[in-house]
Every structure is written in structure tokens, then in C-alpha cells.
Amino acid sequence: MESRLVVAERQDQALAESAAQGDKDAFRQLVEKYQRRVLAVVTGMLHDPEAALEVTQEAFIKAYKSLPRFRGQASFYTWIYRIAVNLAIDDQRKEWRKPIVDTHRRNSEEGPGEDAVDRAPDDDPSVDPFEATKDAELRVRLREAVAELTPDHRAVILLRELEGLSYDEISQIMHCSKGTVMSRLHYARKKLHTLL
Image 1 (tube, one colour):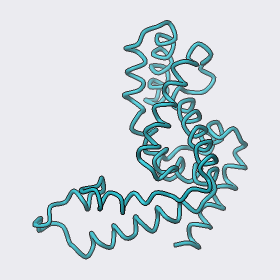
Image 2: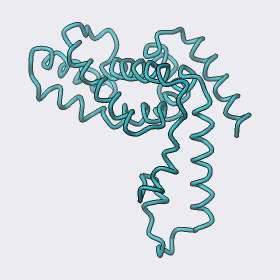
Image 3: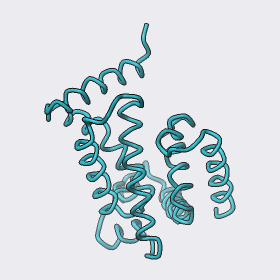
Image 4: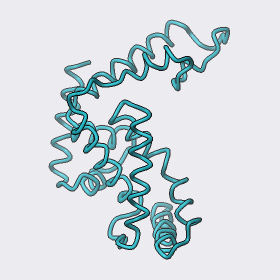
């Protein structure tokens, strides 16, 4: 009996092959399956929702154009993450000297943000205002601490902690050895611990 992961990878491979032959619906299915997850990682890396959306779109466009060269040696999932993470790292390196956008502050100035705390109605008795405030402050501190990491360390911590990817998957995405992934992850965790 095949695992769900193997079946999903085989389905992705078939969709990628169809898309490479010009089946736009097959590629649309791949985009719908992975766009939110890719966007979440890229947003975590860039801390700017608009830039993250642009990088995510660029990643899928690049993937679409590169489909004829996709051989299935890695899963489509790993392949699209590799493209997106590399584009996000490139974007970070270009913008390295610019200040990080504080999305929490920007959202509160522009109106309701994306955080669950912001979406919770004030009169909802199930929401403890003290806990909601504490959680919001922790998210802001965590965002700021992650922003202090180098692009490579930020990518590794987000792929592991946010996406739950294995060391092997991260090493494929980041084009480095499993040992390098483990080392970067250790450093990133240690740095976050110090910052927090």
C-alpha cells in the first residue's frame, strides 16, 4: 500500500508533465495546491506582504516557464519551494539595507490586519483581552527576531518550523548538505533564543 505522500507526489508529477505539454488547467491545479504554503514561507522571509506576493507569483511564473526542464528528480513541492526561496533570498539581498516593514504596525494603521487577534470581535466573550494582547506582542517580537537572521538562516527556520519540512527536503531546496541545514537551523534557533 502506497503512502499518501507517494500518491500525492505521483499526482503532482503527472500534473507537471501535462502542464509541460501545454495543459494550463493542470498547472492551475498545482498553483492552487501550493500557492498558500509558498506564500506563507516567502512572507515569513520578507516580512512585506506585497513583496511576498510578487515573489510568489514570480516563482510560479518561473516554474511554468521551466516545466519542460523539470525531470521529477525532486518532487514538484520541493522544486517550487526551491524556486520561491531562492527568489526570496535574492530579493532580501537586493533590499538588505532597507528597513524591514513592520506588517503588524502597518496593518493596525490601515485597518484590520490578518492576525486572528485583529479579526476577533471586541465583544466576543471567548477572547481574553490580556491573552490576545500578549499573543500579538509575542508575534511582533518573533517577527522582529526572525528579521534579524540572515536570509539563509531565515529560510531554514521557516521551512523547518513553519512548513515542517524534513532536513532532506530543506537541503534539496537550499542546495546544501543535510549537515549544513542542521548547522544553520541550530544557529538560527540559538540566535532567536538570544533575541527573544
